[in-house]
Image 1 (cartoon, rainbow, N blue to C red):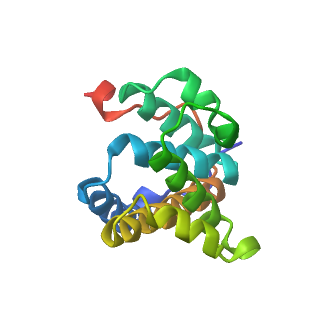
Image 2 (image 1 turned 90 degrees about the horizontal axis):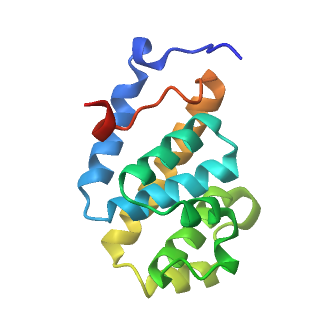
Length: 152
């Protein structure tokens, strides 16, 4: 497929990059956010973002086992309770039209995240969903992304 929208040329990326900068500096663990981003991209079927976050997690030292088992995280022993809470929250917020973010998911995540952390996690989830939609709509080409640590 040919890319059909060029967000950088349109200036669209500037707004999204501001959101990303906030999330990167908010204090949540970088690997946790990247894991959540990969899971959201799996749910949304965003090939560009799947490639990106797989590579980012590799640079962060994440094991292949935890990456390729992510879509079955509930059945795998490889994730901490905090990660499980974040993944459940990310899934519920991503699928908000289906489930309205159930109270049980909220209660479970509250035991692992402070108010600020949960607000920041929710913003990160919303941002990743926006990135997925931009990437899918624009038909960005998977495989072209290079992590900053590798590219520099």
